[in-house]
Length: 319
Image (cartoon, rainbow, N blue to C red; front, side, top):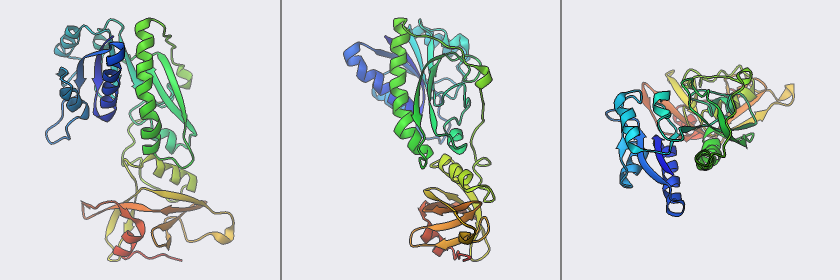
């Protein structure tokens, strides 16, 4: 099949390599690659670099709604469009150009968790399962008919990075190959999404990532997991000189309080500083923090172990 790939970054690169590798045995041909233009000073796009290294046509348009972008896709004479992590809006006048239309990857079990941060939100909400969907893109965000889905567990201590890179990333690459075969062979089904089950959440950014220590330990722990490695769940702390530091917490453990007599401190208090970690009280338990990164006077530091951070900044436990 003749594939037009639309995507960006490492996921787009992995999908490109998967189709190229399969082309040697099954005759798949990637006829062109669309990716978003980089802004001045932005890190080079991994998909663009991979496509150029493979000698493929690279097409970068500020808008996929433009006549130029659509003319470029028509010229490729593609059998199928494959959207692999696309942040640009792709209208129907674009995605319907390939002979068999276009398929798109989304890292949630649609219609649940439509939107741009669909991996963060299930973890933050304490879900024990997530998955991915390959669907037909429409002008509504993540609203098109479903072609196939894959499910995976969210283990109790898994972080955003672990769920994505160990599960949703490799599963998604294989699912796009599988769906492409089904669509081009005419063996696929398309199931309309149930709007009664639909949910949409926006970007999971700094405001959403702020830790409120008065919330239950389960909620705090889920938030930290949902933000690791990005955007990083954070709170404010004062150093020994009273300066306010914005501190992002990464590798953590949850400790549930079992009895009244084992309660230490008030929510937000540092209740213990160990050899490599520190413990912060919250409702229903404590969060043991192993790695942090602080911003002091607008200057962002590097990730470091929490105990060293505490000693370097004169932090003290209240207990």
